[in-house]
Image 1 (cartoon, rainbow, N blue to C red):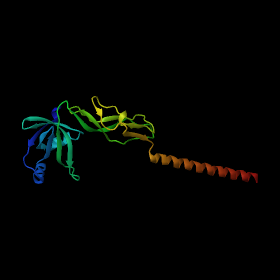
Image 2 (cartoon, rainbow, N blue to C red; image 1 turned 45 degrees about the vertical axis):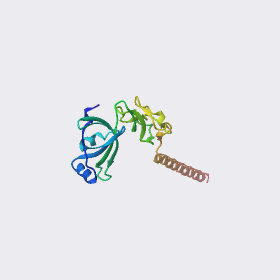
Image 3 (spheres, helix red, strand yellow; image 1 turned 90 degrees about the horizontal axis):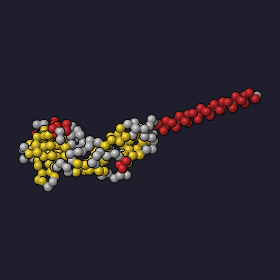
Image 4 (cartoon, helix red, strand yellow; image 1 turned 60 degrees about the vertical axis):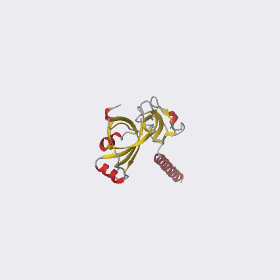
Length: 212
């Protein structure tokens, strides 16, 4: 595991909103660790370091708690809806080699056929993977994909060792022509038809004038 994932955590015995506010004011994040039948542990984490780590989905952190190592997976992050400050975190105990179920972001690569767009119907898929080998994302190649193409979860190329948990028939990506393009094409076709009709009427009027 990367040294960047190593974080020193402080055990805390004081609880309550007031104490949590003081922790955050000191640049720390209150968190609770649970799982594997262990008693929940309440800790304080270094705010800036952890905020950088959790920018990646399903961050795995190697905690140092009073000199003892503990591998944890970030399960939930609670943020202030306005200021986006991390208020609290839930961490789950994991062990090397253990498999966990996680939601992994889906990322599009490539460009679909000109005039079409590829839309994500599912922004993530659930996978079962080893705790120490959680993929950062699952890529979907849409290069040259034409209108009407649909890619389901079953069509995805999964990272090595990963097992799909999401229902296989779940629609992940759909390729289509944008509605505004269809409307514009219809308007152009209607305008062309009107011009052709006017030209036809003018031609007929000219022929009638010649006959007189």
